[in-house]
Length: 483
Ligand SMILES: NC(=O)c1ccc[n+]([C@@H]2O[C@H](COP(=O)([O-])OP(=O)(O)OC[C@H]3O[C@@H](n4cnc5c(N)ncnc54)[C@H](O)[C@@H]3O)[C@@H](O)[C@H]2O)c1
Ligand SMILES: Nc1ncnc2c1ncn2CC[C@H](O)C(=O)O
Image (cartoon, rainbow, N blue to C red; front, side, top):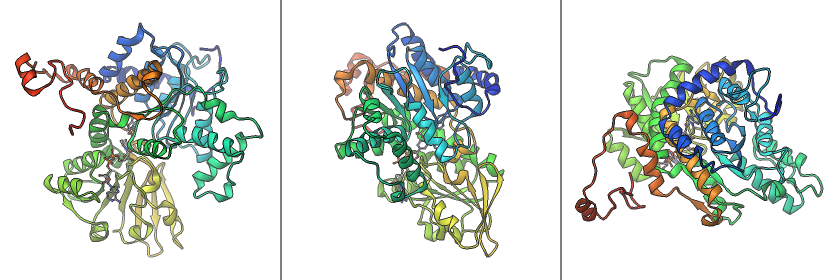
């Protein structure tokens, strides 16, 4: 920590005390992560690690950050979404547990709720730029969605090419912002990004969409460093994606609209881990839930879970609430929204905002966008029909609410911390490629959460263990087992 360092940018430092109170409450609700902090504090496995984080700057993430620091890491942080930062958590991280508003001594954090796209990518650049590092960069990345990993890879690629594509070639506003940033930072011969990337030992990726990007880079042979796919730790995707969204989807809808969900018809696009949690969440409120799917297996699961499985075309003018969860793009197009009922609610809980055709909606002649309150907009069509869009198509559980609760994020962030330790301390075991956490660590994370829920495990007897071909203490399932 540096006295009076101003190497951070947050909305309001005076929120730090409030943030610290909620961080303290969250620590009790994050037993697995805190147990790992305690177990590894002595060994300091992350001593020497310079971790750049690009992950929603929430109260729960603050506990993750302070765990990484407790294990010896230096950290610089940005959020991975323009609406997901909780400003009091960011302030508490900037001030730090031992600092004051007048003398901040925390972690360099660059995040506030309601960033513009330019500000978002500037924050990502700050989190990646380490003033005191020999390379000018991190030696570890902790990513959610892959934006930090993307910036490094594109920077290195364009330095190798000796030029950056013109921002005029951009396919979207966001792509333009990225090209402008790289044009600004790639000056003749600087090799900033190549230097910055040169000591990165790896990235640990939080979410399905970011993992998809990693496998694409691996397939294309352009991955610069190893990656651990944290999302596919069972204790991450079968918990956070499902039970986290089961909690936070309706939290977002309720805070945004206060609409009665009971009795309404809701459409959930996608029945993967997130879709399963969302469908259950809405059914729990008494909605009639319709699922759309492309995958016959997930469609069959939805049907056997009692949901109607239909196409958007069949229900677009009948349903009241539309929630995309696919990780795919162009799920709800402007022409679809034009057919919806008056005051239909449209939202996305997938990682990126490309699931809903916001650009197409804005281009409809005569359409009028009006802000009801932050992250809640009405769009009025020329015929007077209104639809309500949440968080401008970005993930609404973090845009309109506070995301998943601490206990479920304790699982995800215990996985993240173990993955950071794996990549940082065992570089020889992880040549460039994409990996999943070994099962014994996955089971360890689950085990760390049982006491808090009053779970009493049964112990295998040796002859039973032999009979099913596992060790008494696990792992209890083969790698191909689907939970
Ligand atoms: N908001 C959050 O807190 C949060 C948490 C976890 C994951 N996520 C994100 O949510 C998204 C989904 O994650 P997941 O783990 O459920 O992924 P998943 O792959 O398990 O599920 C996505 C499902 O969507 C289906 N799908 C794809 N294209 C479709 C289409 N055109 N129409 C209908 N269905 C389609 C797929 O068949 C799949 O079953 C990802 O972007 C992930 O990063 C968000
Ligand atoms: N409370 C949260 N803190 C940080 N990230 C959160 C929170 N709730 C959902 N997320 C999104 C991360 C999630 O693991 C994902 O996969 O997108």
